[in-house]
View 1 (cartoon, helix red, strand yellow):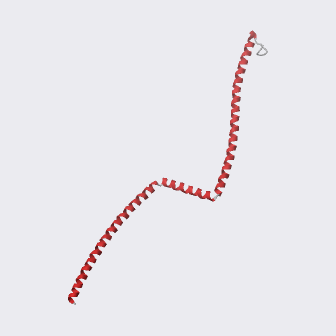
View 2: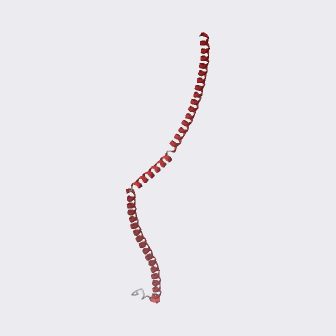
Length: 153
């Protein structure tokens, strides 16, 4: 019985040694690839931590800048104007049906007012005609009255 793997009969120890060397090289290739992957992952973790820290600092700085801007009354007014315009735009988009209905009613009322103005003009024309007629009758009566008064007097 052999004492170890290199003490094999028929010279197979050299062959076995070559197999072990080949396997060792393959494992070194595999472990080298794994070490590269581990180094890559460690780099990704480090970069992610740096990015997270810088993002946090940028967020804090942005909040500070926003607070400084909102402390300015002009920015508050501008913000409220933007809020108002946005609200009106969203309401206009949401209530387009209401807007169309009001627009239709506005057109209907405008046409009604034009119709009433036309009737008023015609009534005014009739009034003028009645006034002219009455003036004509009055003129005729006063001429007749003068004639009659002159004959009686």
